[in-house]
Amino acid sequence: MFGNSYGNDRGNSNPVNEGEEYDVKIEDTGRDGDGIARVEGFVVFVSGAKVGDEVKIRINSTRRNFAFAEVVE
Image (tube, rainbow, N blue to C red):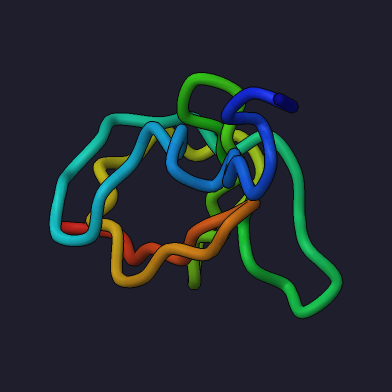
């Protein structure tokens, strides 16, 4: 009667996956000093990165609206 929209979890549209690597540019700094990058508009916090850095990152963990990553050297 109400269709299949009930319980629709938009978190499944996350464009990044744990363990994958991406080339990104750090656009901003988070409140804890982590760099912030975006992959297809999805926010990724990158430890140890600074605004303006162009780095390769590896996703460590994902949440519904953001992910955590580290710089790959």
